[in-house]
Length: 266
Ligand code: DGL
Image (cartoon, rainbow, N blue to C red; front, top):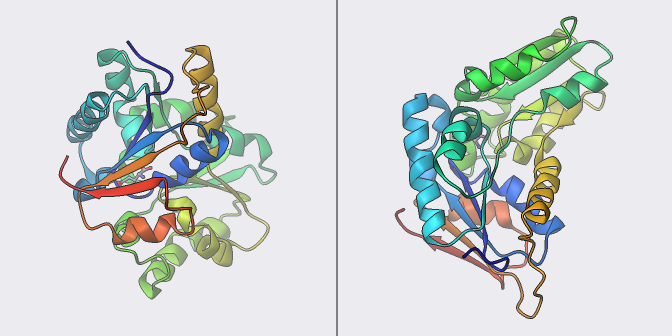
């Protein structure tokens, strides 16, 4: 029997999905969580759909063995390649994350939006389907952020290499007159200060973290699974199958007392 004080599960190819996890625990402070950082297998974005599905299966089964009541797929690449498989094969509710090109299309004035995402996301059938729903007069400048996930996983957020790579991806988009930039990978919100320096103040940077948190609340409410028991404080376990240094760096300065980081295989 699923109980409303069970945890919400999360997984990502690595540490980036914590950008979503932070939004969820902020909106739902009574909820306990279990987060899987599959850093050993990052990046997912360069893998085939079959490989991504196999990794998503492994992560989902780990979280189900821990009795998670709902799973947030905190990764655009995993969602766009595997969410249909997951929903067809497991009973637990899944929340996915997709690049927010629809909201960007509603606000663009130059009719040109940029999207930075992984190869796996941009080449997926789901992304292609969503792109087709956008008004025909809107141009979508797609760019693969090759190498960015690896640098974030390696704790190189503020490195020279990061700024060179980001400039090489963003400058052509600015030259093409984008006025909104969709961050189509959950690792990228950690780069917002560096991205802002390159694109300036006029480009709107859009990510989906808050929308995913609201959707998580709605689905828990609809399934009558919101935790209403506040006799015990929420607990958060973050599993990582590689060195935890980058993860700790990204969590700072979140209060550590109810957060446990566990380095182990899964
Ligand atoms: N955080 C993942 C995403 O949202 C990164 C993908 C990767 O590992 O390549 O797409």
